[in-house]
Structure formats: C-alpha cells, structure tokens
Image (tube, rainbow, N blue to C red; front, side, top):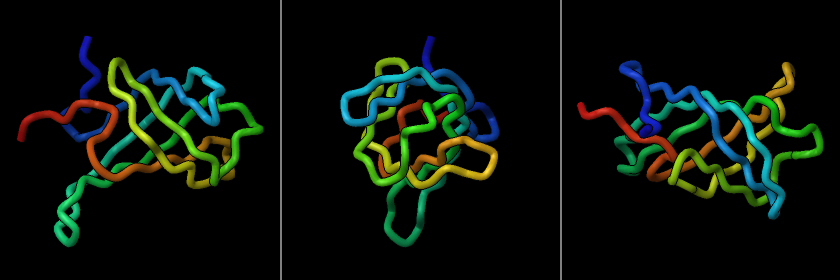
Length: 97
C-alpha cells in the first residue's frame, strides 16, 4: 500500500523515527505546502509515541513505507508529541492536483 496524503493534503499513519541510529515506531500526522518564495515543499506535523528522551536538535530520519527523509526535530509540544518538519520531498506521497 502506498502512503499518500488524503484529499485535504494531510498524511496520518504509521512511520519509523530514527534518531542517532535508534529506531522507534511512531504514528505521524503531517501536512505541507509549496512555498512560493523559495519554490520548495515545506511540511511538518506531530509524531505520536516517540520516546520521552528524544529531544529537539538531534539528527533524525523519518521513514514511511519505502520513503526515508531527513527531518528536523522541532520541539516537544505541551501534550507530549514531538513536532517534526522537513523541506523537500515529504516521506509520503502527494495526491495529484
């Protein structure tokens, strides 16, 4: 099954987070947009279920299906999820416009 964003452009599903070589399963909810200023696709969202010792600033990868991309760990939000972001091709497919 291909991991693709729904009609609203939001991807909600299972992923694998790799932080400094330590891998853990997470559920993510991600959305993005094409930035008209720099011409790149910017996406971000929340990772649910990431271990509490994972903090912002560490190098990380996010894998969904067969797609793996470098991400930025932004911060822990007050409700406990880990905010992640990326620039360029997202780790999920985009629906045709």
